[in-house]
Image (cartoon, rainbow, N blue to C red; front, side, top):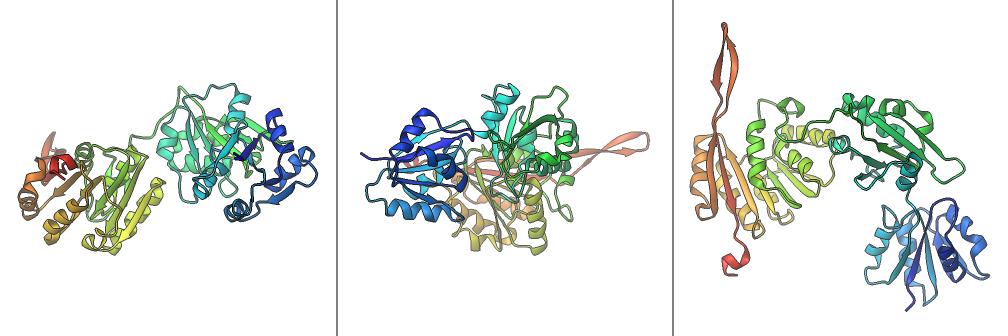
Length: 411
């Protein structure tokens, strides 16, 4: 057996185990800086290949042309933590690899700070130009954020303060070029790091530290309507949103938000369950623009937006574990049936209706699979003279359907 060796480096050099691997290497791949660092350990005749601007293509070519040679790949820190290890597994899932990790950048920073990190929340923004899950980041008591050349630690600190100004005084720390001669590490507040020019480097880690005075963003459950772009009250209101999300029994998987409008239900589902892949479908061009802006502002990943009619998109979307239908009009019955057909066994579909006709559809369609049919009535207090009048809003009908497991279907 001749597995590919994957060696991590923490910037200060290689471990004794890693040096032994390098001395026996015939084909070495890595970035320019790491190749230069490894050069003194190599045997004469060893071939070095720089990964360059297209590392995946270079790796694939090297694996194909290996011809039994002892091959080693250099990486920074732990290759399996936001490193080349994931790329290797995708390129060659059947290849044998042996990994030799070194401390990662965030481990080095926490070591400098003397802060235990076993309960840390980890985020990587590498190559994610539009992603900043600020609620999840700022709600974490302890977090590490990997930054890149486009979004440095200083840039991310600015974004976090802009998205949630109460976070300006949050205790934080930054580490740049950790393990290198140019290393820089500093502690302070998020606002201070946002103004720190030394934190404006491509190799940077931003940490959010425990703070007794910390103010957390609200849990993304029934948030105020004003936090979303919407027009003409075309939005599922907070109380109904909270009930619908509780009925969906969220879990990792795929969620469809059909007739998404502002996208408030799907966005809060994604905020509550980060492992959820959410697909929004909205036919109204103006609502679609609002939906896109709401998705951008929440800064969540695994969101896909589809403009057009639900019936056109239902055959194209990935098979769902959960479905929310917030619209449909005269086509609601067909949308329900077609969407339910695509739902995975054991999956849940929840739908809402404002109009009496739509409510009647929810009361008649898929009755054999409906597990709940309820009406939500909300009254809000408004001033009236010296007192308060409880003014009723339009009642909302909610239907919840569950698809039987395969054994229950007899399939």
